[in-house]
Image 1 (cartoon, rainbow, N blue to C red):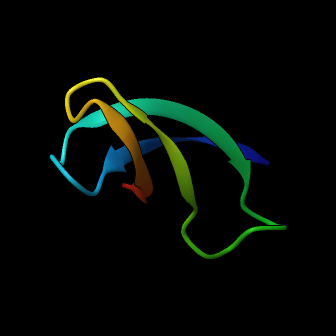
Image 2: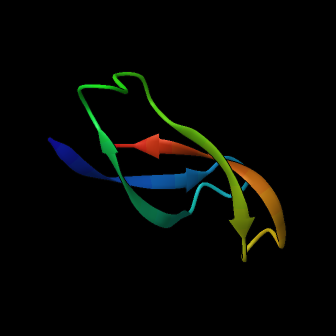
Length: 49
């Protein structure tokens, strides 16, 4: 039931991270605050398709 998702930086729009989520428990898109090495700071990363 877990699927692999890609996280995209909201600042520079680069896809930096991949993670997994359970689609049954979390139906909406995930937003995590992670470090972006291109922006050189902690930015919000949103789930993409």
